[in-house]
Length: 412
Image (cartoon, rainbow, N blue to C red; front, side, top):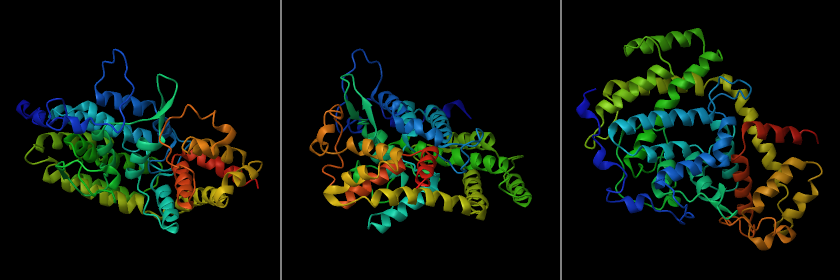
């Protein structure tokens, strides 16, 4: 690439000179001050995500293939690291803010359910049965960073993450499954809580656009590698894949080759006037590979047993918890079944107690006094709130933990 192509987005970068910097760095609540802190707002967001429990759990959440005992199969955490690597390489070359890019990439999948997209499907079914809208992980990621994840402050109290607007926006706007190979940011800041469906809006920053396209680049080749390693696709499929790679002048299709070629193409072809984009050749190639993956991997009948298992585990846990709902007697009912399901009930109660109004806690009020977060479940006075609490609890589970809880249910 010509050296002159570097830094074409310097004037668009989200920094102190940007006309909307105050909006980009706005927080719902200001963070506690740190004496001598040398980090900018986005660096602080990055470390807050890095330190939160939801990020740590990504290492035991499915990306595509459920194989919790195979160290060489991509997990949700590895995927996030790929997205961070790809997006920061692009952002650095183009002259965008790599600190903002890194923070969005780190947090973009915090709201994924256990068992990957199959877990998301079952949670959507449960929401539909309760006359609620669809579960989608981009919005759930925003819910996680806004309301669920907590960090201990310098006063030994637990507070919400309270990330900047630009990071929050990039996370909920990141949907990489849509076929948009040319991206430009939207012009106006919006209330992110009003997002009604995935992909409804473009990100508000160029950095968010880079993460969005990087999400697609990061997963297509890696999913193929796992499918080959697990012998999930046939020799006929491999022949078709080789033919596809030859069509675009590639000797092979794998993560390393695809990431390099797509990054170079984006850096060569993107500009503030044309948007973040691939060349026509690589745009067609990306779409062809996505079609191949969808037919040969994601819709492969071999996945049916796994889909059924994921649904069974999530449904079983939900059914035990929802059966205890009885208005003001719900907590009592949960305590009554604790002898049968000690881990499930203890962990669920500990989870919801952090988000209920203090007056609901009784003798446990003092134990949770250090939690100064938003009390999103309030008095737990409607079934809908209770269902939301169950779904928040389940969506935060790792595959391993969900399986362990399901095994506990099988004992009775």
